[in-house]
Length: 505
Image (spheres, rainbow, N blue to C red):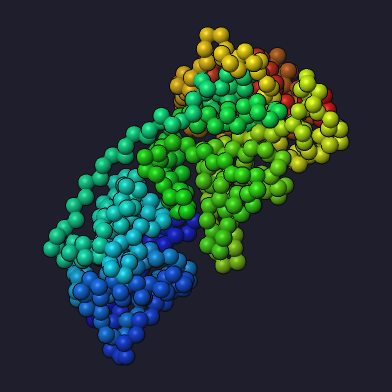
């Protein structure tokens, strides 16, 4: 019977569901039909596959060719199934052996000349192939990405003829994966470049140690964006599990994945004109948005009040859950979105509120309207609000006495505090559950009294109460102390600037 079965992988969110490509040759008028809910790019595979087989000097069967892509009710998109369809035709017509196809999966787009072109989503496909215990044949350009999945046998090829020779045993493809090169960090901005701003640097260190969200408030040109850009330099490298999650998101996105930097936390900084779909993801076939591209990394929103109100409000749920579900009429996709939010804003519309120069002429109503662009529920989800004021010209010129501390020294303290948190709870302090807060953030009577008075005076929510406790836990970890002391609680409360500052100074 002229039937061949080839395994491939589709793409749904960051998942790679198995697609079984069945090719049947039968008598009748020559035709080529693809069934199984193919989209336009998949239907066009017929012409690419036909041209590739003919130009590679294979015999294109003059029979009735039926290609079924199962499961039939799952949409198939892209040119990722070209190689599987071509091999199915070759196997069904007896031009390549079928013996090894049941233990292989194929992925790749074909050119008319038979060259294999890279496809998106190679890493999720490699992870699933590893779990299924099969080899993965894919374009050579995707090999470095696929080997990040770990113990998976990758067979990279540049041409359809190479794959056919490999299956027929004429010339096996031998591939010895190399270890990913060490990331080059020379281009990472250093914290020593920022002169002064001791208070802001301290807040940045605490935010890095506990993965806390941070909002910086200050006049234009005081260094808010400069500080945010240096946060990745003091963050620890991601664990292998975290890096695989983040790399899988990058793999299915239009940005692609750089294997050299797969362990580095992502830093995303969308412009304030970004739309809600650009922020959370979207499209007919859902793609990840900025919050998912920043998964296990940093999302920096500069000029926070300038973002559309609807764009900011969509951040509220993923800030709590760490995931985003994109629903469309025909399909639904889940993307991870556990990001650290770093934001910056001016104190008023003109930006100079509170400056000694008296340049600000904004009224209280104007300031209130400006700050009201950030809703209370969103602000409540940001652990730290700090002021970033101008530094003296002498400090700006020469730096602080004794020199500025570099990112390497700060990162050592951050890594030490992170290790303490991981050994205690298995994750960073910002993700402590209510049960873990009760267990790991217990306060003595004096500290508890201080916190309750602050909550009562500032009118803080229960969420803010818990966030202050988690922040105090991180401050204690940086100090290497087991118990949270009253000084830690006091410092944590001091980082709620917008809860205790009137709109007009």
